[in-house]
Image 1 (cartoon, rainbow, N blue to C red):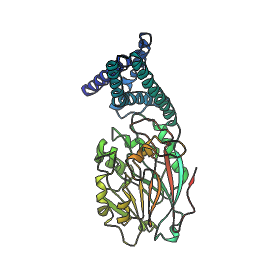
Image 2: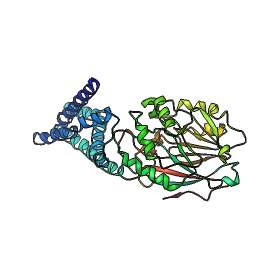
Image 3: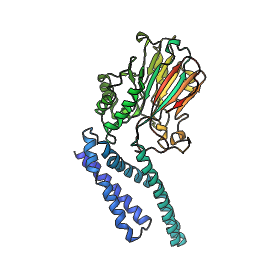
Image 4: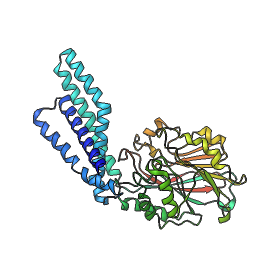
Length: 391
């Protein structure tokens, strides 16, 4: 209880600082000051409700998630961005105006900052609206070297990064579960970040996938947010709900009638904006695989292509990047391209393949802009695929 009060206190202190800098730094006219203060008050009213959700691994209704909780989250995230990126511009603008004794410079700076903030605000609204929509279903055919002919057409549902937590509703992820069930996969593979903030959210995750029972099983790995939440607690709950966790190990599906090996390893939780140091454990993860069987590797973060070339794996499935959650329109690059060699879609590497999904949820920014969430149906081929299809 004391921790929550302390957290709430510092949130309000930071909000007061942000409001002060905005009003005084930009010299907002006095007639507009009450409206600015009112906006800060209104957007902080949900704070007790959000703390209540966090305290008990609870979730809001779909309506409250979309209209109250995620807008509250976005408001605070955007004002932290304001502190980091725009406050230095305000300080430089005010210093320049003082040095040149120019009130016009303050006016120009004010309108420039307001234009930037207003434009980002409109993008935020668009991004929040996009979180209401269900994930897209992408279908991707992938040729696997050495795949038995009888496995040609094997259907794999690839799910990643739902981030079940206090900012989304159970009903929202239930739509993803229904989409996956409708794909009638032979195998369900989950590449991490199932939950955030509390391991009990695993039960929400599992409930929404209860109807997905592929003949070859359901397998998952630990992502970096599962590490932050408590990797052992998450893994135990996942196993108890019928998911096989691949933790630096491999498993053969030959006894189930599919001459394939699955391998996976825990994310390290370190350096989350870039490559994972745990990628060096790939040789360990695949060490027990039958050398005569193709290997599908589950890796939360997409490894660098040179790591794939040096490995024994045929196909790597990854997530983590979310495609950046913000991309330029018409298929342009996203924020994730700044730090990852390959951030989304299929990449062939000699006779190997890497597929990175946008993921089914959001984290950090509670919105998506030109970068919709997705679940993927991977169709394995024993020869070159005719191409990919998107639905």
